[in-house]
Structure formats: structure tokens, C-alpha cells
Image (cartoon, rainbow, N blue to C red; front, side, top):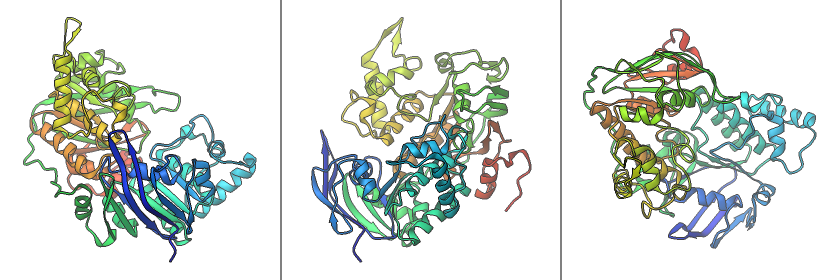
Length: 504
């Protein structure tokens, strides 16, 4: 069989790093091919070269046996390559059809395009209303917009980057049915994900990258997730663990918290109540856009809350700003790492100073102690294995996974009394994810109270003592995490938390 796409010796170097080093692989027609590797392994650079966003320094690509070297994404799309990025590029204020039209070279009239969207939607089991505003859609529905935009171009190769990071288990199953149907029809799929059990369930073959080089291939359904993870990182992975968790006094209480949305397309918080004890980890699941950002901003102090809604050890903290809450031991790490958790153009030392000044004693009487700030940044880099040349590097120069490790490490090392984290291992490889989860477990063992907001259900079940679900700004009653099934959790995330969930 002639491969649909073959890469021979692709190499791409940037100052100080070789992103791809003599990479070769082949993808056959109709094959679902996984691209695996830890953060910084070179996956993103490789798919950017295939999609025409980056030009290789050397090596060749061939499509259907003919030379293939797209100078820009438009040329790649014309050759039959479609890509669904990890971060959606959609306009909230426009309809589904209008967003799809923006991504087409010669878009038909909206009436005709709407009919095409409906036809593709029905064919591939991706329910979507062309006239609905994108701002009103769930994360799963937004992903369908991106996928249908690609499918309307009838791609021969579909590249998917972390496609299930914001989906419920039910939405993941719908996506997998679609991808299997596309594969049966002859469309090849290049699939990037850190969720190795998904890789085993979906993919026909896998290429593993480490430090920019191909270090192995495998058939996922015949290879354990542990073995694939070890191929990626080159060592045996440790499983996060905590022996005999003990809970102390109540540290944080939230009582009937209600707030308007952060934006026109945000989600209001509706009557949220829960308590959190010392040494306890509360996992909060939910599809993206159901109030996660609003909840974190209320708990961190970015938004003031009504009197009596949030209390730390019995004292009302709703009127306190973030730095005042930090002084008391309430710390937070938001989901958006570049722009919210870290300033892109500031160095890691400066970013360490931004949240660490109060608790780490990095300033006195308005004067900043840059030596101490640099020492703190270096401590984070060492303790959390942040891959960077120095603490003077800008935050934007780090890969997403390495910046995530820095952001989480910065908060953990400040010895918080209460820590709230949103998507702590988003876009992070298996080894780094295990290290971050272990750090959160160790923090709880030391007596801190931890809230983990995440769309990764495996993560929540691995480290949580209790679980609750956010849906349309409402929080379900927290339940012991042990014994909850994936089906129960999926139903809670889908809005069944107002009733007793049937055991399946």
C-alpha cells in the first residue's frame, strides 16, 4: 500500500534546541495514527510542518507519492490536509455557519452552507444547529464546529491535537464514532493525545517522539498505557499515591454563592455551597464553560463576593483582594496559563515575583528583592523539572507543558493553606502529570485543603477524596469519589446532579 503521507528525515531547529531531528514516519489511507511524546518532544512542530505553518530545515514530505511542501496552511488544505487545533479559533458573537464560512476559501451563501453543515452533521453523528451562536455552545459543540469546518473541505488527512481535553465521556464516544466512520471511508487521522487509554481504544498505530527524535513505534491495542508512557519518557513512571488521608478542621466554606457571568457569553454562578477540610482534596468536574472560571475568580479574590458567601476558618474573606487572600494562605492557579497565570513577555523570575511576593517575602516596604525572586524561580524550575535554559527566559518561550509545571510549582511551593487549581495537568505529558498530581497529594498530606477543577475524569478519580460536578453554574452535592463510576460522573456533568444518579 502506498502511504497517504510519508515523512523522510524531517529536521527543524530553533536557537538552542532541535525541535525535530531526522523524523521519519508514514501514514496509510484510512489509518488512525497516534503521535506520542512528552511535552517538548516535537509533536507540535512536526504537525505544523505538515500543515504549512513551519518550513523544515531539511528532509522531505510526500503526499500520494508526490512531493509535498506546503508554503502555508491554505496550500495544505488544498492538498487535502485538515487540522483541528487544541485551542478553538471561533468567534462567540457569530453563528455556527458564519464561523465556518470564515475558515473557507470560497464560502457559499449562508443558506447553502447551512444545508451543507446540516448534511455533514447528520452523516457523521455530530448534532449542530447552523444558526446557533457559538457563544451559547458547550465545549463539545464548539469542537464539532471545528471538525465540520474541516470535513466540508473533504480532507484526506485530518490532524487532531488533544481533541478530548474538554469533553464528557459521552461526547468522547460520539467523537470516536465519527473518527471511526471517517477512517472506514478512507480518511487518515493523525491523532495527538496524552490520554493513553484513548489511544489504545482508537488508534491503529503509533509513533513515539522523545527530544525531537523517533524512539519507537507500536500497535496501541497490543501495548499497555504504562509501556507507551515509558517509551515516551525513557523511564519507569511512578503512580501518584497517598496513604491513609486524614482530614482536619474545616478551612473553607462556601455558602449560597451566586454571581453574574464574567462576560456576555460567560456562565453565572447559581447558589453554590460546599465545605472543605484540612487535608482534603475536592475534585470538581464539568464540561468547559459551565462556571469553572467564574468559580475560581470568586475563590481567588479576582471578584468580590456577597457578604457571608466565602469564609476561611470562619472569617468572611469575600471583600478581600487576591494578595490579601494570599497573605492568609488562599492561593490559586487559573486554567489560562499564558496571559492569566503568567505574563508572556516577563521572565520566569518576574512571574515568580507576581504571585510570590507576599508569601515568600520577596518585597519589603515597596522594594523588590530580585535576588530572592530569582532563587525562588530557580527552586520552582528544579523542583518541578521545568525545561528552560534559565530563570531569565520569558514565559512565552516555554512549551505549554513546561509553563504549566512552572505555574503549579509556583503556587505549591508557597505552602498554601487552601489551593484552588483549574486544569492542573492540561496539555502536560504523562510523566509531568504524575509529578503534578503527586505534588497536590503531598500538599494535602501536609494539611492543606485543595480544590482541583478539571475536565480529566481519570485525574479527578485518582486524587480526589470527594467529587462534585459543575453544570450551568450549579454545583452538585459533593460525593465520596471512591466507588463513583464513569457513567455516574458523566451524568452528573451533564446536569443530573439535581437528582439521585442511578447506579449503572
